[in-house]
Image (cartoon, rainbow, N blue to C red; front, side):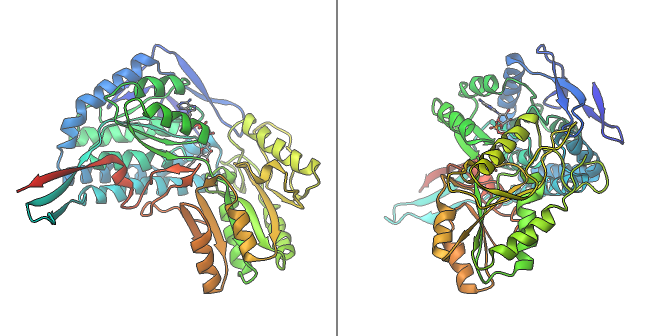
Length: 488
Ligand code: NAD
């Protein structure tokens, strides 16, 4: 079964992937909505307990055989997936734009970024490190090797329907772990298309059945609690909100499953007096409006030295007011819809709260006529400290600008959040830049950069933004357990 998606009618499978086989579910189907039109795009299988139990049976049965596939072979298989996703970049981009709303050009960017995790971890598959050392007491040798942790459950959000999953699937496979993927119910189609690509690649190489399963469902809580109560599952890797992350960490305690948590953010964007405003502007637009602000590393709070704040706001307002709203397939659209009516209303409520408390919108600030879940690019200034929007993750195209008198004050306010995912700092002075790099408290700090994601770098946070890293040489460690062998 398949649905034709987007203007080119890309055929996307709508059933579950239990290994390389498609399967319907006794749970029926659920609809996928295009957020730009509010029209239904497709109905996809709504998995039940029997389906995810089957996926875990398959993953468990495949564990030993997959782990023993030579690293070079794993590299070739992962590289094949990279190649096939890249060849079908336009198909993936169309599906993402249809189900998630981002403009096609941005969707193509995500395909390149998401596919790159397969290439990067193909390269890592043949470089899994070990260690050998003389025991200090002189009584033998310390040998350290690495084993795959075992079957993995990945739960992913809707904002980057491809990349948030590939950064989990690729390292799990490279490490030798089978994986079950549960995509967000808002955006299951991209993953179901990836399931087709993976099935093609796996058949070509004769990969054991059940190494990757893709289970779409509206019962995320049922799936995670049942699978995590099974000791055969050895790892949970999650990207999503902090409350759900906390719940999953609690559930992982029962069988002490390994956990990686990529959670919410509240990124500060600190602009020092000696920053290059042209550079800052370009980076601000990237950090704020990429994906319509629906990114965990999106700049949430602009903190600007008071001596340059007026010039910054004037130019930011001019640029942001030029971000034309529209369907991601329409030429000229620079800003797509947000994902759901609920998200749009949440953003509108945060803005209204700030305006009611005395803030000013220099552009945007109100919900346009539908259809479609649109919210305009908005700049807020004169924000009272008690505005909820300064402490909550906005997850939308709204920039808040406040000022500071000294850099120390700016950094202190930047760090005054329970989150610690990304932070951005801007200065042309090497000492100031160094100060920002060292003192901004986050898992990732961009210095004079508005785009920081890179499959070759460790992505992840501290504090309420979670733990664990995705990408880089660190990313594969999340799926490996060290084995110490005391050798003679
Ligand atoms: P969400 O936590 O509601 O949903 C994320 C995923 O968890 C979805 O697949 C959902 O179906 C599933 N889920 C929901 N309730 C569950 C439960 N009780 N048990 C198991 N699974 C459950 O988050 P969202 O609103 O879809 O995504 C936005 C959030 O994700 C933001 O807070 C954002 O910052 C965060 N995010 C973080 C990163 C990162 O790398 N740190 C990246 C992207 C998004």
